[in-house]
Image 1: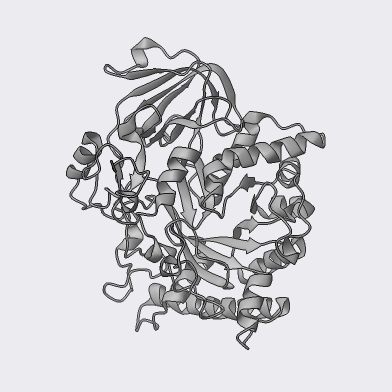
Image 2: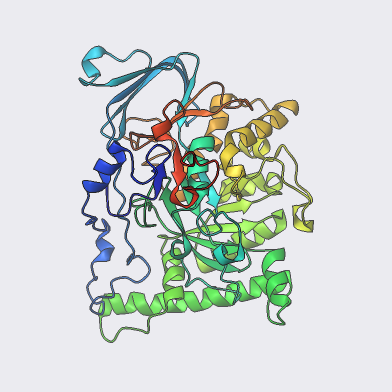
Length: 486
C-alpha cells in the first residue's frame, strides 16, 4: 500500500490495521509518480509550470491493497454491460478480472486460489456513484465540517473538491459495507454556477485524499443552473438573480476562458513570455481542451437544452446532467449530444424546479437510447443505490417498459463509468478491468439484499462473515457501538 492508506481501522484491530492491511501499508514508500506526460513542463512553458489545466500538483498515490487469486463459482452474474450469466464464475487475479463465464478450466485457475461457493447469490461490478459529497460534507454533519461549497462568488472554478475531502468520514465505510460502492465522484456543492473541480476516488481506507484518488481519472467541473445560484447570489444583491442572469454570467466567464486558452495555446506553440496564470481559468481551459468533464446540476428540460446550446457556442461538451428530473422530456436530445443523465428514482417536489418529476424517468431515458444512471447526492442514499434502481425499474415495468435486471445494472456501473471517463478501467466484469466486485447475498434488487463481500482491485475489503473485515472510521473508534468499547 502507499503512504496515503490507513484511513479506517477495523473493528477487531482498534489501534492497528488487520495484518493484510498493515502489510500493504508497510509495503509502500508513497513514491507513486503521476502517469500523465503533461506533469512534465511542455516545450515553451515557463519552468515548473507545465500545462496548468492538466498538470496535477496533487497526484494520486493510490496503490491497490494486496489480494489473493479468487474464484467465485456458481453465481448469477450481472456483468454491468447488460449481460447475465446463470451458474457462472468470476476469476480475480492480480487485481484484475481474469475470466468471466460458465465453468472456468482448472488449468486457468492459479495455485492457491481462494474458491468461494456463490450458489444462490449474485455477483456484480462494484457500484459507482457519480454524485457524492462524502468527505466534503462528512458525518457528523456540523457546520465545522461543512466544506463542500465555496459560496463566495457566482463562479469559483479555482477551488478543488479534493482539498476539502476528509478521508475519515464514516460515510465511506458505510457506502462500502452497506451499499457495495467501490468508486465515487466527490463534487462541490451547487450554490455556484461553476463550483470547482470534482475528484474521483476509490472507496478504500486511506490517510490522505491522494491515497484514495482514482489513478488516471479525469477531473470534472461542477456547474449548476436554475434556482440555487440565482437564489444564493441574487440574495446578496449581485448578478445572477434570474435564470437569464445565470446564463449571462456563464457566457461571460466562458468568453474569458476562450481568450485565456488562446493566449496559452499561442505561447505553448511559439514561446515567448508566458501569459499570467489563473488557477480558475486553468480549469476552464481544461474543459475547453476536452480533458476536464462538465458535471452539470440541472433540473428542468428547457434549461438543459439551453446549456447544450451554450456548450456548442464555446466549444465544450457536457458529460452529464445531474438530478435531471425532467430528462425524460429530452431523451432524444441527450442521445444526440452524447450527454448522460444522472437521476434519482423518486425524489421530487422539494422546490419548484423539482416538481415535474416522474418515477419512470430512468426507464424512459433507457427506452430513448440515452445514457442514464442512478446517483445519490446523499450520505444515506449512497448505501442503497441498488434499491433505488429497483424502484425505477419497477416503475418502468408498470408502464410497459420491459427492462431486464441485467440491463438495469448498467445504471449502477458502466454508465457512470462512461460519464466519468473510466469505463476502460472499471464499471463491468470484463477481463483486464479492475477487480471491483460485489457478492450479494441474494437478488440485489430486493430490499433484503446486502453485500456479503466486496473487493476493490481484487482485495477483499469487506466481509460480512469476518469481523476483521468490517470497516469503521478512526473517528468512530471509542464511540458506543463501534465494537471496541466494553
